[in-house]
Amino acid sequence: MKAAHAAGNSPVAANLISTLSYQFANQHDPRTAVLLACTALRGAETSATPATLALLYERIAWAHAKAGDRSATEKALAAVERHYDQRHPDNEPTWVYWLDDNEIQVMAGRCYVELGLPQRAEPLLVDAVARCDEDHAREAALYSSWLAEAYLQTGDLHRAAEEAAHVVRLDARAGSARTSDRVQHLRTRLAAFRADPAVRAFENLYESEANLPVISRRPS
Image (cartoon, rainbow, N blue to C red; front, top):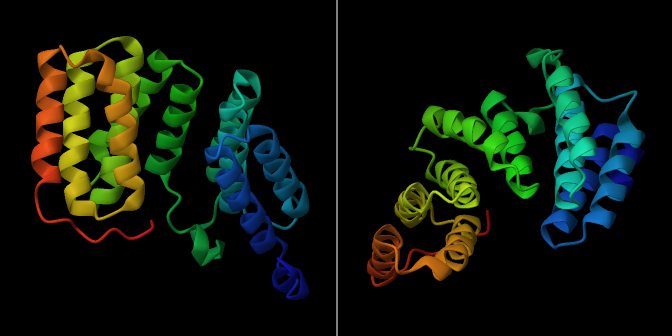
């Protein structure tokens, strides 16, 4: 951050702070996450490009979702779309390359899952999963894992377990610690429903995959 400021690049510093916010949010400290995400935005609000602002607002939305604040989450999600629509691809920093329409839609779906609003999350995630290229196994696994969680929240065990099984297959190809963590999260959520045939099939698939040679996991 000091190097970014010394170089006169406030948006890079803001991205670093907002990334730290994302980590705090995922480590169950949403109050710190909200503070950091809003601080990041304030530091670069007048100098950041539209796509960068969209990314900073995404981190604000996620922090508020983790804090259970629906109103603040939806306000931030609206700002994400507004700024992203104003982007100029040729003028955007290279480090925001990965932010696209699908990622924005997935984040909105994730926020609604976190807020316990699966009816809002499901159509967003269904559409995003359908458009995801499964050659990118890590992203496809992550997207599908949140869709499985949305189905769980609606009580649709069959589709939740089927989607979770799909995540297991993708995780075997992804070699990602993050996708493996999502598999374990889904296993924990589904554990109470092991009497259901679809859940048993999911668990059997997981156990069969677990007996295959272990893929080296890399942080991602």
